[in-house]
Length: 362
Length: 50
Image (cartoon, rainbow over all chains, first blue to last red; front, side, top):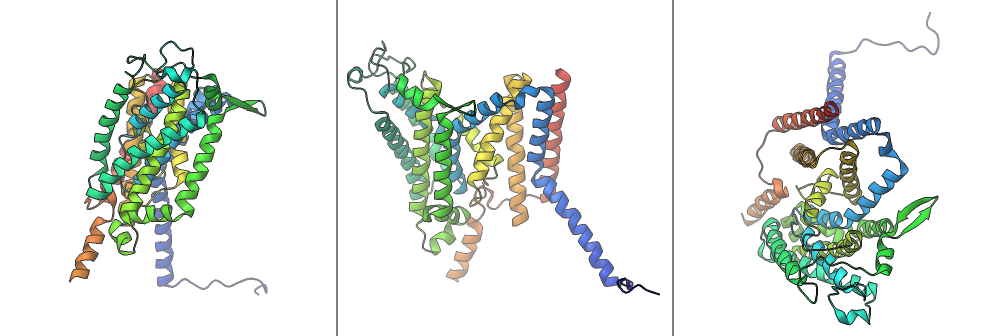
């Protein structure tokens, strides 16, 4: 006799068996899709575990704080480039703009007693630090507007436009460091109050954290707000996703592209401001190839070249992972040549995954 | 007619840098797997080299 709570199982019909089989296969497909889509993260986590086992000091507090500081230093450029990638563009001039703004910052904030001071007038009347920040943000914004104008107005490919800007900015940097008594020398001798405000540190629970990290957090919060909560951000995603459709829905594609490029330029200005203090001695080569790391970080963080896809969270994770890889190379003692190969491989893998995801969506 | 042309244009524009790409998903999957294997192989090489 059956117990009252016991259910009697009826034999499964052929249709039910087929449905179950289909469900099982779907699950299998989902798992393999997950593994492929997250293969880069799986590999990187594995790599980090491997480095930690090989060199336990890799996950010491000092090492992690150092990686976070490096991440903070590279974040503004990645946030700028990220927005441009969402618009299906790219920016090859970012590093050079950072270089120029770093040189300008350094030249305006030199110590009065520095022998090669560029502007002797500043020895007696030092410039306010915030005014210099404003100047470099405007300079960065102007170059951003320059890029944006040619992309938005003449529909030129950002790759070509920003490549031209890169060369123009480099020439300006080379000319700029000839000014005054500097005569092409690296621009150094920065004021201590300026350096203290950027690379000075505060102790939290006995851990020294540079101010740079806090500035980066503010920038991330600001950009998150712009990307997610403002009309500019929403328009950026719409234009990146489909410019024609955005135009039909009444969004000004020109204004949106210009705004995103100007914002990116301003962020490069801020990054240049940080760089001048971080590097200390700035020359025309400062900032070179920064944009490549930024583009790589964005792709690793899931900002898609298909346009209209990407999150601030992804950019931050991408920059952090890239810095983690770079730091791990130092711990493993990998020579520089191999470092480039591994970074290149990671970028290629990230792009392939991105392209595959696009094909699946399509 | 004009409307249809506009729609086609919109569809073509979508995809950014990947617009109008014509590659097989299978090929990309194989590429991802091969690149992952190369990555792992490089790591092993690093360990062996010390």
